[in-house]
Image 1: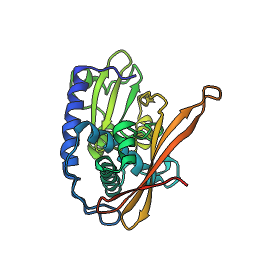
Image 2 (image 1 turned 90 degrees about the vertical axis):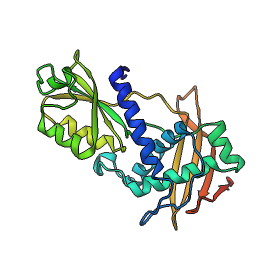
Image 3 (image 1 turned 90 degrees about the horizontal axis):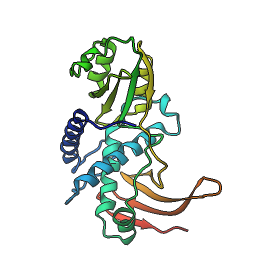
Image 4 (image 1 turned 45 degrees about the horizontal axis):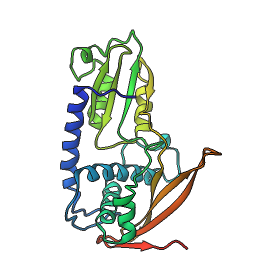
Length: 253
């Protein structure tokens, strides 16, 4: 688990500010291929942050197209992420009763695992010396390969732990952490990569592109079987979101 400290809290505040600035530019989107184009009237900051993560994970799944996450690129398609984000917010803002249920009542969001998008921990060997600047409070690292990755992907380094010579790498805009972490793991001096520990989620969201800048979003609530310890879909709600933000509930057959 990642322990909180003042440095990480400052970083989190900075990332949240960057998030809100970025999302304020998403309200009116004109995507070239896949996108939506409607104005979002009002919002809650915490909800915005969660739906931004949802959109990034769903866009990552869309980008993968059934392939392994390690076989695709690091960047997440921005126009797809924005389009899904707007569709999610449209459902959140909708007066459709089923939409209110999955958002306000059940607060359904995407699973974190295995679609990691935000951060991971890099654990270095005790002999690794290029982490020394972090010990002195300098966010820069004395390793050109690491610094190139930081600059190229706009990464942030924080939460240095002297006991195990480790640090946290954070990404925003969100990235395909599976590939990014793999690149870090091959750098000389890195012992291992740790992904954030997450519990088993009782809900998830799936996105299907319908064409004509429209999406079908399905919200799922799972029921954990205490005998088999497996999760089964307890209930599903599907919605069609048009490019103008119109939301229609799709009844289950």
